[in-house]
Every structure is written in structure tokens, then in C-alpha cells.
Image (cartoon, rainbow, N blue to C red; front, side, top):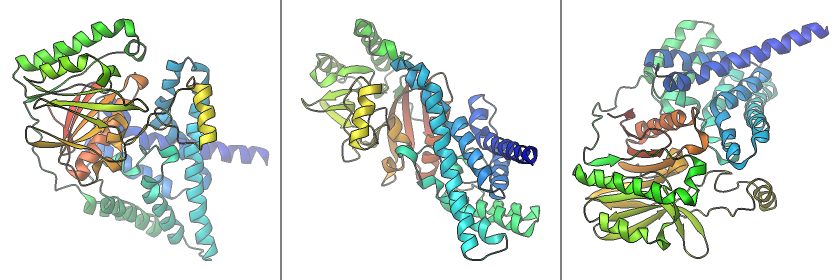
Length: 422
């Protein structure tokens, strides 16, 4: 009896592992340069098809391994705090968070169907499909990078909610009727309406930097780092660009209190400059964007902070303890209340700094253009830059936003109509 139970648990774990592996395929294929719409379409549909027919224990294992395959890189940031010992602990916490979330959704779905005294398969399937649909709105610790429909961002199917609902409905119908042919109804979720123009603005220079985290905060290296940044600005001027964009916090100082501000303002007489830097008003540290244009300096502060990285999402008494133990008592950054738009050369851009460019809030009002600044040094080498890029493609496709993304420690790029432009 014990051997049968052990075999059953191993089999369920294996199924969960395999489902999670399929769900992660689109990320790793893109990371390795082998992404293809046909493969991504098949992987996404198969993932949902297999998961929907499973019980809550398989959902737990699937969620746990999805947490592992999608987000293992989060723990890499701990090495920069000298806490390599805590990496496996954080990975286990990530796995348990998503494992329990998946299990809970499956348990609720099965429980509701049982309470309704339903002995068939349709209601449990519908409730589980609904659970998969609402997963895009459930964000453990305010971290909203898990969206099941993201699997289709580089497929032949759409990523809008109504298209995702069609995909789930087709799979539910197929499982209920036990006819694989019904899966073909996903054709009604086919992506057809995106414009084909993916040409980027030739007047904009995106700067990529490769400054490691430890070097970034080493004040003895700042002079050389800053000179390199000014060389990038001079190159933009030489190329007759109208705008040069530098990554997040490439000036890891309170720029508004530095003499560099005057030097940047002088360069801005020849080319508009958007750069990341820190801001201090005497009370509150902020992660900010500085905009130099038309003899004017503007500062746009971050409105969505990175959970644990910039702001602790835990209750105050726990937050203070975590900051003291893990972050040397560092004070959290403070977010600004309102999303910021600014204008350069007659074009309005939505401001976004790293994590917030991948959050729904930054796309309120469906901005046509966005400038995003990132520092991926905390998580490289890993799949984090790839997953970030796929999320930006998702939002660009969903809201029609052209995103100019300047990055430290991974390649910069422009996303237009959901595609990475040349």
C-alpha cells in the first residue's frame, strides 16, 4: 500500500514538472534564440490542456515548478548582499508561494463543483479554467510577472483577455466532449490585427552599459563610469541624434545635488537627454528619471517600486525587521503617487523605470510612447532580461505602446507593435 502511494505521488510530481516545463518553453527558447510561433502555440495549448484535467496535487507541483522555472533568478540578487546561503531558501519560498496558490485555486474549483453536487466533468473544468483566467490578477507579494497568457506572446494566438478566454473555452470543450478536434476552435483567438510597421525612430540613440552592481556603487570608479556616459552622449551628438537615452541609475548619486547636473544641461543644448539617477529632496530618496531638453530639467520619480528590492510589501513590523537583517537597515525608497508623462520634440513619452514598465498601472490611458530605463545587473546572467523583454512585448501588443528600453547589463532595444525592432 505504501509503495502504491509513493508511486502515485512520484507520478503526480512528474506530471507537475512536465507541465511546468512546457509552460516555460517559450521563455527559454527565446533566451536561446530558437523561438518560433508554431512551437510556442503548441507549447501553450498543451500546457493548458494537460493542467486543466489534473487534480489539485498536480496543480501544486505544477505551480511550484512554474515558480522555479520562471523566477529562480530572483534569488540571484542575494549574492550582492553577501547572502549566498539564503539563495536556496528564497527559491523554496518562491516555489511554495506559487505551488500553494495553484493548489488553492484547484481546491476551490473542486470544492465548488462538489457543493453543487455535480458528478460530471464540465463544472470542475469550467471552474479550473476560470482559475487560470484570474491568475493574471493574483500577484504574490505584489510581483505581477506571472501571466499565463504570456505563453502566447510570440505565438499565432492573441494575448488579449477575450482571446485567452477562447483558448481556455476550446480546451474545456475538448476535454468535456473527449474530442481533441474541439481544440481547433482556438483559431478564433488568432492574432490578426497588429500593424506590420516595426521601424524604430532613427533620431533616438539607446545606450547600453555593462556596469556590474558592485562596480556601480564603488565611488572610486564613478569618475571613469561617468566619463564613459558623456562619451556616449557626445557620440549621439556626432550622429546628429535628437535624443539619447541612458539606463536606470547610471548616475548612482543624488544627481540633483551634483555638479554633473550643469554639465548634462550644457550637453542638452545639442541633444535631449533622458537618464536614470537618484533624487534627494532632503527627506526621501527616490529612483528617478532626469529629462534634459529645451534648456529645462525635469525629474520623473518612480511610481511602482520593486517588491523587496526597493520597497518591502510586508507589514511595517516585519518590513523593519527584514530591512534590518537583510538590507543593513536601509530605508525603503518612496514611490510617487502619479504616473508621469513628459514631452520631447513634440512627442509625449510615458516614464517607466525597470520593474514598473512591466506592470499594468503604467499603461493607463494607453500611452503611444514609453521610455523605460532598466538595470538588470542584479539578475544577470539569467533569463530575467528575456522574461522582461517578453513582458514588454506583451504590453506593447496589448496597448499599442512603442517602448524605448535602455538597459544596463543586457542589450537595449525598441518594442513596437509587440515586436523587437532592428
